[in-house]
Image 1 (cartoon, rainbow, N blue to C red):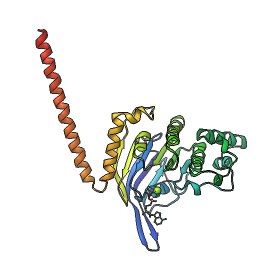
Image 2: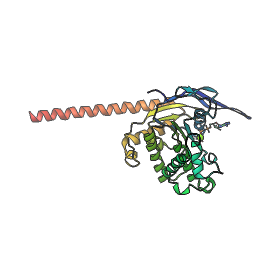
Image 3: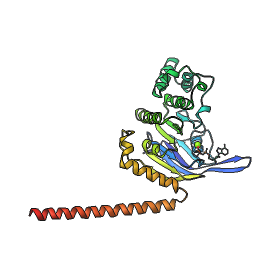
Length: 294
Ligand SMILES: Nc1ncnc2c1ncn2[C@@H]1O[C@H](COP(=O)(O)OP(=O)(O)OP(=O)(O)O)[C@@H](O)[C@H]1O
Ligand SMILES: [Mg+2]
């Protein structure tokens, strides 16, 4: 698959008054068109820094980000970001409706903008709040406005930093399903940073597990769960539970990836032993059946 987004040998060191701080050591990965990739990693490891470099807001001190084959040197047009600090990303002097319409000003006329914003506000359950101002809303509602604004824009690449962190559990499930629906309908490529391991497995086509600070890639795991995903049956499935445990293990021992490899090898060896024992049991039963019927 041709990469839509490519992050190559990326590194970033912040220069602060009290000295330099390396947030990202050396990251390389690609994301194909229409893929949803979840990024998990310990707090402070550099996930938001990674999204800032991909969105062109921060120029990396090392390596390169390319989108559709072009180096990212500023904020690309066909990209939308839901920031971790959503409260600062909304304009307090604009109504909810106008906030959602704002990025559409350059591409759509007035009535098309209105319709698009109304649809997105309905998706996130905020139709009734369209005339309110962000400061009149709860934190979770403001976050949903930021999500609506990004979805209304219908970007080719959507970057989301802890997008569902401050909504209640039920709304979180609904927004996860909304994201999967929008992604499937509009073929959007999505990169989601999340602290929630279950969420990374539920949403992702792939999961990138990052090490502690400075970030590097510990594992790039494919998620082989059937679509469409379902909040009850998918989360109950053996594949889901197994992958969730693997991500948790990788995060726990992210500092020593040698240990992770050793554990995975031991798991694989033990699985192979069980498979061999099962095969032997099946052949023995078949031989007994044959003997009994002859
Ligand atoms: N503008 C900045 N100047 C200096 N250091 C910074 C700046 N922004 C972030 N950092 C530092 O870089 C490191 C990575 O920060 P970043 O916000 O990318 O982490 P994160 O993985 O998103 O954390 P969290 O999971 O808590 O959101 C942290 O040590 C942070 O203090
Ligand atoms: Mg962050």
